[in-house]
Image (cartoon, rainbow, N blue to C red):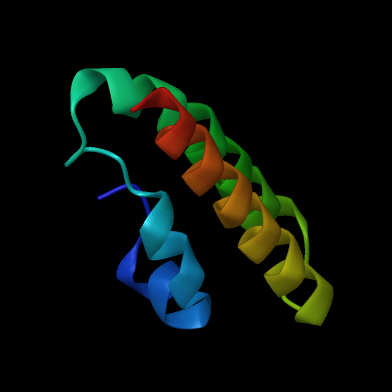
Length: 69
């Protein structure tokens, strides 16, 4: 698990940045998005704009994964 239960409880969207369950090729694509999500959660205070940033990042990650299929 890349995010703690507490982090997932505080920001449920972060659970979708986990990538260990993906095939290796898609893990490589997803990893950098997860790292950036980790930095956002670590350095930006929890507020509505942080949530928007995480949701937009998730959209970008999903598009990148789909493009790699």
